[in-house]
Length: 247
Image (cartoon, rainbow, N blue to C red; front, top):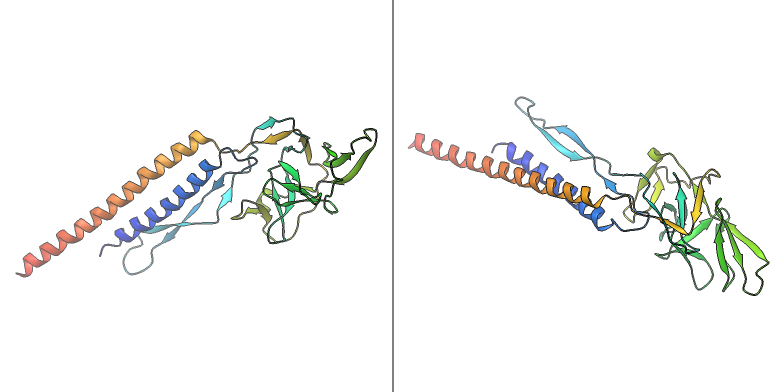
């Protein structure tokens, strides 16, 4: 059988994976702090007898577009957006330290600062605990202050957000949407990272561009399927010719 049918099949498989990534990005176009996933491919020559005229397209290490999204003012005290590059540190469900740009925070029943998805927000000294029924304010340097009702003149600093800014090449995005260092080690806090309180960073996904990508990928997939059909048709014609010549 002509090896082109296997090459077209491999191309169709990679296009399906790209479509899945594009669909995932589009579904998160309105997710706070979401960073679009990217796919890269490498060429793998087909080895074997004959001339090296064919190559497979294989998926390489997936990545993410770390371009900042638009910062939108919300006026909510526990909404925080990072200015420029950087990440908030959180505790992932497996207990590891991970990083996110989603700064929509809340307070758990036991007083811990958490994300909207329930992850513990980490400070430079560990989880940040705030007094009950207090008003929370976040400073530009990530300092978290609490004002107790009836004691408006008393502002207590309860912690400081752990803000990190590792090199973009040193981080990778996990299946849970969080970023981690490739080394597996926690990143050091970076005092140069600043935040804006009462605001959130929107997703950096361009919905129109994502839709166009999905349309192009669908057309390319159809082309690969036509190649498979053509290769199969050529094989059938070849078999007919061989049968006729042997009759």
